[in-house]
Image (cartoon, rainbow, N blue to C red; front, side, top):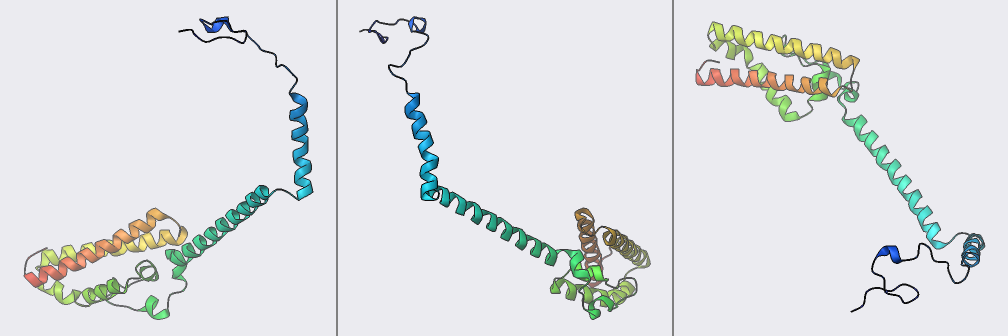
Length: 198
């Protein structure tokens, strides 16, 4: 069995035996040049080829889709951001009062828009004074201090959010504060029902 051969038909044992360069039998550049110069003339005669028009149309469609997505994102963001809803609260929501020290604020309604949450919170706050009366004095003092601390935290966070409404960390802290308030109210409700302490 013989190995590979070079252009002269000789057997080659290593790559070093191959010639460093091979000149073509004829000059290929004039044919390549004529084909390259014919392409732009062809496109201008046809007014750009169908592939070019399709690519251009796809670019415009992609730009339009991107702008549409951006517009929808801005619209959704403006309607769902908590700071955006504060100015559009109905007067009854912003000015209603319940137990002193636990009155919901405009930001409460903006951040907590679930009607079930609102109903449950109102019911727990309404029953808070009678539930506290059932608790022993140390537990009552503990609950009152917890609710006062939560209310102060809510006011501080609302003030900070008033200065920086887009701050995600402040928004998350405020939501956690709402959850803490709900936890305390629920614990008071359950403790007074079962007769156990807090």
